[in-house]
Structure formats: structure tokens, C-alpha cells
Image (cartoon, rainbow over all chains, first blue to last red; front, side, top):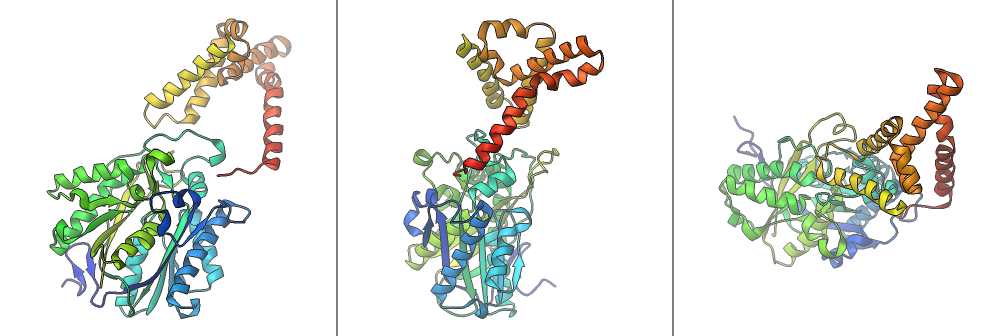
Length: 338
Length: 114
């Protein structure tokens, strides 16, 4: 017998859809100079955020985003049941340190850059399952910690190929609640780790496009919906190259999303003026665009129903050097105006 | 001449980065240039380039390979087989130490901006 709240192969639906009652988006100066600059809650111009290292700065960004979201919801950390967080540092240390300071019961998540949508999914499951009233989901990334982690230390000054994306410096947080006003999360589709053999760590877009496509197609088949039932399908950080690949792959599956399909990594920067090459990436990419621009558009009534697909490249610092290719992942959640 | 030769060596490196698969990393190119310089030097082909271009041939990584090979040759002439091991580092000692010392001081004095 299929599970009561499962649709098709990979999708779950929420009987009492949890509401996103508040959000917080904190970014660095490069993100603030981009097209979405005005949609963020706070801009931190100093890449160190007054700390000794970029890692400490990232932890503070994460804490800032959570605190902004809690303030907007008029909640204290004690009123939150669970804190779900993740980032791109070794052993998701930024989240662990933020969890230490914030004092909420903490589940660490890792889905690379898809972590924000993974968190929304897990948070909504906890709430609709009756295990929590309020859950905070937050993620962070920092350009300089991520470069060190996945490519080369910033100080080394290695040339960036045109396929490479620019990691978003920032953090996004949302407060999910069983009641209250705000856009609701109605469905989530959990993606498969898909690897078509792309191994270039400076081209994540191509590595993630097949996984994002698979999740979108699966979501539409599981729910029986057509692309027209969504005002926007927005992926996390495929960037310019990955989005075009995903569009082609979707057409191969018979789905033409046309201008309803965009990507947070494309929205956040202006590639002509900002020299960001393939677009934005990182956990914070989908998080700050969703917690800022997308939720604002939904609240303003300009978007009714959005399919957000967090995308992640599941490599570590050693796997490409050991000749491993890069599995991609996509987790989708439906966010709807209520 | 120094500028032209040094520039051409760098052009080769840039083409290798741009025209090859991602599997050829900057580390491969670094090691490749040092090794190529060392081999050319062993066949006596690098010294003429140094005479022609001076720093243009010595500053790029291939020049470091040349220094290692010449050090090994001198070491053998002086100390026999042991010189193969001692000679190259002896010849390159000034460059290596300078890199460590300057690296150390710059790391203390400056902070990367991001």
C-alpha cells in the first residue's frame, strides 16, 4: 500500500501545507550590486564581516539571516522546535557553529547547493507529520570558503573558465509554521543523485542539469500537472549553461517550459557587468533568491504558484582528483500563495 | 627579446589551459613546464634560450627546471652520484628560500580581500 501522503514515485504532498511565515536574506556586496540587490534584507560589505576568517564570516551571515527571520516572525529561538541548516564547508561547520550560538535543536543537512530545498522539504514533513509547530530552515555559502573547498584558494588567483559559476556570499533563512499567514509549501519532490559522466569541477551547471530535469519531469508526472500550472519553475544554481541544457533535456521529455523557466543563479547577477561567467551558485544562491525575490513576488500576487528546484553538485575536494565524475541532485518544492 | 620569449612561453601555457580538457589542471601544466625545462636543459637546448632572452627564459617555470638540471650536472661533476640529489636543490636554494621568505612576510603583512 502506498504511503498516505505520497504521490507517484518521488513526490509527497502536505495535507495541511506549512506556511513560510517569515524569511531572512543576507548577502555580500557583489550580490547587492546585482539585479536583485533591493530584495535582500541586509547587505554585508565586508567579506570578513568583522571576523578573522571567511569561515567565521559565513557563520555570522547564517546567524544574521536566522535572526532576521525570527524577528520578522516575532519569535525567540526557544519557540522554535527544530533548526535545519547546512552549508558547503567541511562537515558543515558554519551551520554547526551557528547552531551552537542560536541554541535551537539542530539537524545538520548536506545536499550541496540543494540544501535549502532539502531543508524546506524536511521541515514541511516534520510540521505536516505533527512532529513540530515551527521549524527554521537556513543555509549559507561564502565565495571564498567555497572556492577553497571545491576549487582553488582565492589567494592563488587561478583563472576562472567561462563555464564556472560565482559562489554567492550570503545566507537565507525561512520560518516554517503549522499555522500563520504566508505562502505555503504544498508538495515536495525528492530527487535522485544522477550522474551522466560530467567530471569538470569548473562546470557544475552541466553536472546538475540532468538531475534538475529528472526532478522536474518526475514532479510533473507524479502530480499529473502540466508546466502551465506553474507561474515559474526556478532552479537553484544551474547558471546560464546548465539552464540551457536543462531546457533542451526537458524538451526531449516533451515539456516546453519556455519563459516560465529560469534559475536563481541567472537572476542574481548581471554577467555583463559583474564578470560572473556562468552565473551564481552555492547554497545561498537559491536561498537568498527564494527568501527574498521569489517570496516577495508571491506575496505581492505577481506569482501564484512556483516550483522551486534546489540543485546540488555532489562532489568533495578529493573526488574529482580521484577521477570520479560529479553526481547532481535536484530537490523540488511547490510554494503557493494562499 | 626577454619579453617576447617569456611571453611566448606563457602563451603556450595559456593555450594548454584553454584548449585541453579540464583533466589537464594548472598543477599538470606547472609540473609539465618544470619537467620540459629540465629535459631541454639536459640536451643543452635551454641554455641558448637563456643567453638569448635572459629573465624571459629564467623566470617562467621552465627556467626552474633548467636550474635543477644544471645543478644536478654540476653536483655529479663535483660529488659523483650523490650530487644528483644534492646539486639541484643547491642550485635552486636561492629561489626556493626567496619564495618561502617573501611568501611568509606577505602573508603576515597583507590580508586577501576576497
